[in-house]
Length: 179
Image (cartoon, rainbow, N blue to C red; front, side, top):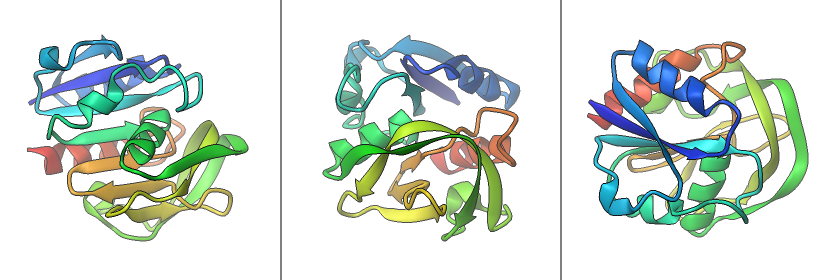
């Protein structure tokens, strides 16, 4: 399996790449300005970013039209929500540990507990879901911690950091449903 990590300028993009390699997956990081015709892979991860979904997203909208499974992490979730017609706004922001409640033990949460301690680092949040998406996880401070439609998954928190419980399993579950 080949997975491309699209770099949106996030501080942990290299950890997403490392997690994939540790799971035995062929992976590479590309800038978010890469021409979509050069994106050849089995699945994509849209990384987090330093800014807002309203700036610096490169060609991510184009990648979401490639018809391959996508996991959007943090800003990647925001890009996905906005692209498919949802709304993203500045929230109260979070940095640190948060308890997330799994609402739907969907593919990416299969076999995991219904409550997870995760690591957050964001100021924007999804305030209106795109049509056809369902909420998979929520927290007291952020209603959309995870969402899905078809093979498009988005998560607000960072599964690639060691502070997130079962983070590797979430990434592994995404890979398994992407084959």
